[in-house]
Amino acid sequence: MKDSSEKLIWDQKSTPQARTSSSPKLMVWTILFVSLTYVLYTFKLVTTSTTCTHGPFSINRISSSNNATSPLISSSPSPTDLRHVVFGIAASSKLWEHRKNYIKLWYKPKLMRGVVWLDDRVKTHRKEGLPPVKISTDTSNFPYTNKLGHRSALRISRIVTETLRLGLKDVRWFVMGDDDTVFVTENLLRILRKYDHNQYYYIGSLSESHLQNIFFSYGMAYGGGGFAISYPLAKALQKMQDRCIKRYPGLYGSDDRMQACMAELGVPLTKEIGFHQYDVYGNLFGLLAAHPVTPLVSLHHLDVVEPIFPNATRVEALKRLTIPMKLDSSALIQQSICYDKKSRWTVSVSWGFAVQIFRGLFSAREMEMPSRTFLNWYRRADYTAYAFNTRPVSRNPCQKPFVFYFSNAKFNSTQQQTLTQYKRHRVPHPECRWRMPDPSAIENIIVYKKPDPHLWDRAPRRNCCRVIKSNQQGTMVIDVGVCKSGEVAEI
Ligand SMILES: *[C@@H]1O[C@H](CO)[C@@H](O)[C@H](O)[C@H]1NC(C)=O
Ligand SMILES: *[C@@H]1O[C@H](CO)[C@@H](O)[C@H](O)[C@H]1NC(C)=O
Ligand SMILES: *[C@@H]1O[C@H](CO)[C@@H](O)[C@H](O)[C@H]1NC(C)=O
Image (cartoon, rainbow, N blue to C red; front, side):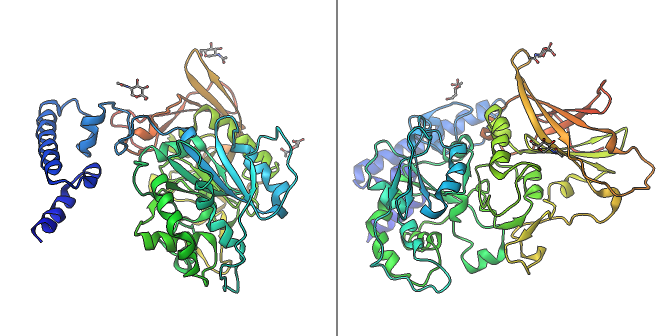
């Protein structure tokens, strides 16, 4: 009895690595070691507190590395890279010819490993740049009783298990996605590196729709947005999944089946809101123009929403987004808010995607709310059915924003900065009687920014933007970068 109560107290205080040790002697040594490390660390913190830029979050850090840019939680010897990730893509043979074009946008066969799991044979071509395709194991002997859903949910929920059983080497994470999911893999890695792949992690995000989250779960990773399962968790899942699935014949999809098994394993969802299920219709503009301050990891339901750039096909539009993605992935569609003092305009940059100019001054707290350019998944539901704050599209003719879409980019190696260009979206603007400068005089916006691959190694913060003097008629020039000391979005 004494042993077990000691263990209980110990478990609460122990670091994750120490938890596996069971021999009492080893435990005493570990306690001594941890205490000593703690004392040393505290001492170091006290003596170096003026220069230390990071908080005393984790004892691991001090014993593993002192690298100011290394992730806080990871205790792995080498940082997680693409070669440690295996993608499991859920696809259907019927939509394959069309949907494979989304996969081609992000999948790099030389650098990545992945398998597309299909329900039936499809034509494949060599050198298409796609992952190998496999047919899922037959699941017709599993019960499925949901009247609205489809049996394919069963095979899709088993993709992690089936991919694990391929026995690939040196895997740290299995990442699931649909055939209409586009990943920003650099940012996916930035998220995965925050977590210790030797432990049980189930990482993903919710739906935008409050009703979806109520019907399914606020604790479920929505499959289309993509989610990550650490290797040991996939192993644990593999041992019990088939038994587990049989206990939930009434569930609708694959991701709720996955969540049911995660609940049995006792592993909660670790929410990372850069994974996007995008359970919406209409135009994603409002969401992309005011992305939360976290790396953009994925986009989904691209067949459902309008192309993200006007006058382009869905695939062409996404292809255009890969240009800024290659230059500065961490900054992709990150928002910054500033003001043109002279003209009294509000400027909102969504880097690599669009810039907006509004007449008048909007506060940062208004601008960081997505405007409702999109519709709810449940078409009769209104804005109260989103799981986050939104702002209405203004009816005042003067407040219709002037939108400039990303057109091209280059990198200036002398200055070590990117130049991205945004062209005005020519749509009719209603007449405005405010006596102030008219943004329709601007045709073109140029944004300068230094790439910042370590943006997400620091505490999350929006970049600052500044409108700078332009000699060119019809061109606005903006500088985007880390906020200077004391710099705020104010006028
Ligand atoms: C920290 O790690 C990064 C990436 O692994 C490396 O480029 C950098 O030189 C390291 N810095 C120090 C101070 O060790
Ligand atoms: C739309 O795209 C086509 C082909 O890329 C181009 O010729 C045309 O000028 C574009 N129209 C507008 C309004 O930008
Ligand atoms: C890079 O910037 C410098 C200084 O502004 C300029 O002289 C040069 O032409 C630029 N290079 C390119 C390739 O744009």
